[in-house]
Image (tube, rainbow, N blue to C red; front, side):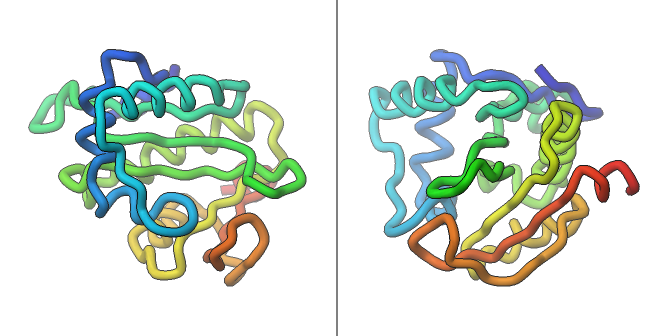
Length: 177
């Protein structure tokens, strides 16, 4: 679907089940997703259900995609996580960008690279602005937001039950970069 220098961003497929179970079975990954207590993926059947739910979110330019490393090296050919562009819950049509990666893939710039490609897709698809919300203490994700040019607007209580750090990027700011 999308290609960067090092990554292939593609739809999830049923064969990704073991990878989903490996990544999203880790509390250190799922603790940053959604509200409340972390709920890891625990069975192959759950992994398939998650894949089907993600596949059902395809509504260009929106979607929930797998990040696969296309460059040679230790991650070559490996699906390392997800990047998404989806409507924010409890909102008025605002769109959220997000990412979640296997801990082995943290610190290599993959989240920023995938996010930039998805931002381009969203803005090319006509979105006027894209939001990101993080848990209050998720410093690595906040750093990604800043690296990809998003503006921090503060703490909000808008879309999720728990308060969130809020970042936003407008189409005009994206084009002016």
